[in-house]
Length: 112
Length: 122
Image 1 (tube, rainbow over the protein chains, first blue to last red):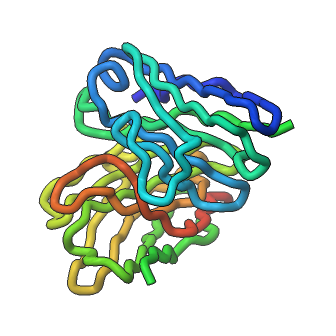
Image 2: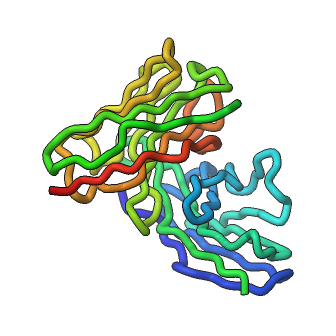
């Protein structure tokens, strides 16, 4: 049950757009649309911001968007704001061996 | 108020056991699958286990299988995690999380508790 691969850190200036990649395999990200993204501020619980690859829960800003191509999913944040500075985690369902969920290692976003 | 509140964390010696609880309120607990997710200090998230809304379907991460047991009591709106044979590497904040969809596993975690810290140390 290997974790999904994310860059350790990304950065951007206010107003810019950034993307975070999440690379899995043909058994998880590549096989299912059960890909989600979570935002976690220091000392806080994670918050669901994207599910089903590209859907946003009610109340989540439309500056957050998701996509997938092959074994790689991506989170894009447009119009960066200071409050976006946080850790971001991708997650994917997989049924390799038994059904379970995988997380990426997390990406720290710094707003310069 | 829709919330999850974990309890039961603390300091425990390697090889000992601990039971965590997660009290749910503000939603129909018995309609939703529930998960445990943990986070070691300064590290990323790690999925632990899931239990279906009716308790009939249970799955674990390989590293926890055989040592951890997830269960629920729908009459008490409470989720549990029994952890046995604890190891130093089990030290983490343990979060309970609600599945997004009712009556099925959707594998998205749309409501999280604040977490409870488990420290395994001699």
